[in-house]
Image (tube, rainbow, N blue to C red; front, side):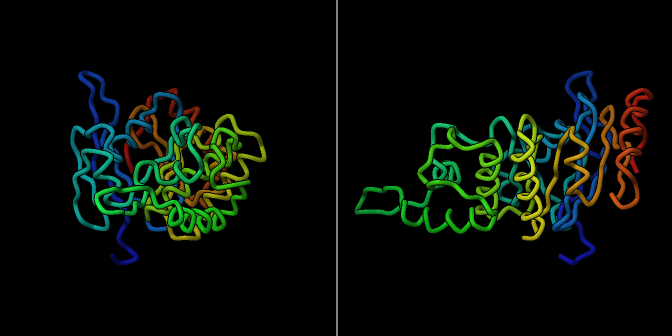
Length: 256
């Protein structure tokens, strides 16, 4: 893949639910190591668009390209095979499980003793410890149940999972919602670490202050359409907020 080839390209993506046209011909390119802020008012279609990308729901029409090759994404398994991991704020972790088990989530390394298979906890610790260090995430113990972690730490555990399974793109859905100021800062620092690792990020958020502090590019979705696709350096936070109010009133605009 050349540097001019997008890691991901969406071409003319549509999603219909009966008479409801939720996504209307969206075109989007994401490059390696790029952080995209995907924003829009409630019901704009941004979550539906992402669900087609990760295989939660199938697109009605359009094409996905991964590293320049056309691909079909019909399930979460398909998107994970490509290297796409999604972290949903409300479903990022299982609170009753340890940090180690949350990182692997059913994909734990196993050892065999004859016909018997058992979890390889030594190998898991060797993997998870350095991952958390790389993210700057300090926890009392890897066996600590996630329910005792802060909101920011929980997001960090989910991001560590994506890094371990060699995600090339991580989708974060409202990762700072309901977090304290300090916890939100921690999550934003995790996003910076992902970028340093060359991992692309699509960040969905209503919080303009958070989005604007870490993204390279802003994509506004309104009424199922892409209303704006602009580099952060070519606009201001105030201009984006004004546009959100404007496109919500007029009903969207054509894709760039």
